[in-house]
Length: 355
Image (cartoon, rainbow, N blue to C red):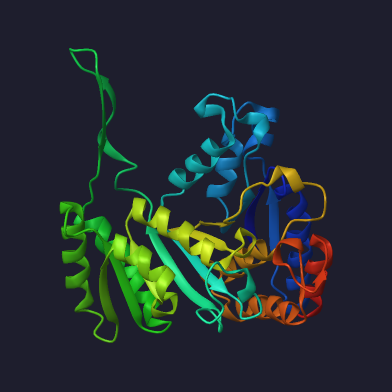
């Protein structure tokens, strides 16, 4: 029995939790692989029940699990809360507490969904398959000193510090090289080495590390050019590695290439398990409880969990292929603008039939 800390969270997270249970049962039946889903509070629901977006018991159970699967947190009900009592605070805290440092964001567009992309059909006629890796623990978001200070003349100055250690860069970049080795052997490192000392160190460390991976084609791009190239010719990319701020921005640009946040999973991994898995989409309170949520990102997050935490590539591929078969039949939730529009449960059941 494999223990999964299951955090449905808020909004459509409550709708999608039933879908997760259906897939747990099907996977147990088909592969004799048992998951113990331990449902735990986080986010707004946890604030309402316990006065804390990440209760101590939730964190304890997460640390004692083999993997953590989170759906979504947040909603307008809690928008005016102080920062430490907002649902998102629970998400930030769990990432930090689990010591995850690498966010993995697959940007994958099915050839049956190219009509959703913001790009011309001829640019993405065969779909997209990119993976963006973002470093999570250093850089501008965490550097010290930081703050807003009042000067003697009464004016204010804001300070943020961008810092990176060579140790962190190398540890993170190794994940990118290893992932590229298992894919198309093409790695792009994104920085701003023409301006920032941080990026010069980043490029130096990545370049030196590349000598240990002679089979990998390494390319360096400045972040502004990378943003342009992702629109101009996204299929040139295989695996992308970049620092925290650049990764935050570029991974959202990648989501725009796909056309629906309901399609994208993510994983946050560290030196040791448990790893954290979550769909990219938010809690979408406006459609909660209406059987409208797209379950694909959740299904793909489950697939990532089997691939990275349980090393069951066969189950991961079967899940992804089952989704592809349903899309091939032009069946999809409303956001996918398919010929046959169905609800959350109906789409999930079609995937289960094809698993």
